[in-house]
Structures are given as structure tokens and as C-alpha cells.
Image (cartoon, rainbow, N blue to C red; front, side, top):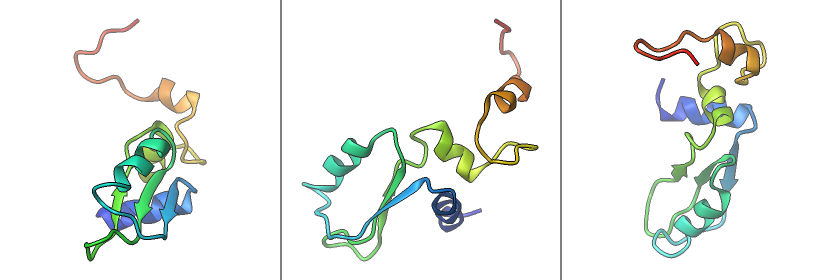
Length: 96
């Protein structure tokens, strides 16, 4: 799976926002990203002075991560309570 695949999955799950207006990489992009921090991931389609779009926020929250890699057996692809409870504990992790 490459970046394009991840972005397609996030878009299909409604976890990706697109900014179509041109933004300045130095003065605007980071400010817009900071305002959206913690929500949907963002793709800036037109960044002034660059040939490629810029994406940010893929790992901001569990819903974004779940859109990319849904848990086994979870029909919705969301990280629901039952998925978290049934997920195996990492080695060396202590039980609470």
C-alpha cells in the first residue's frame, strides 16, 4: 500500500478534506493545518511554488488510522470499543 492508496481509503471513509485554493507553503499551509489539527486529514491540492499536493494529518486520530487499516472483523472499519478490547496486547505490556 502506498500513499495514494492510503489517501483513497481515507477519502472513501470521509476522513479526508481537500483544499482546492492555492496556499503559500510558508505562510498559510501550516496555519490551516493547525486549525484542522485532530480532525480529518487534509490534502492541499495547489501549493504555491510546488508541483505536487501536500497532505497532512493522516495520523491525527484513531478514526483516520482506522480508515487506512481497519481492524480484522470490524465491519465498519472504525476502531470501536470491541475492536480495542479484542486487540492483542503488545509484548511486554502490563495489564491494568
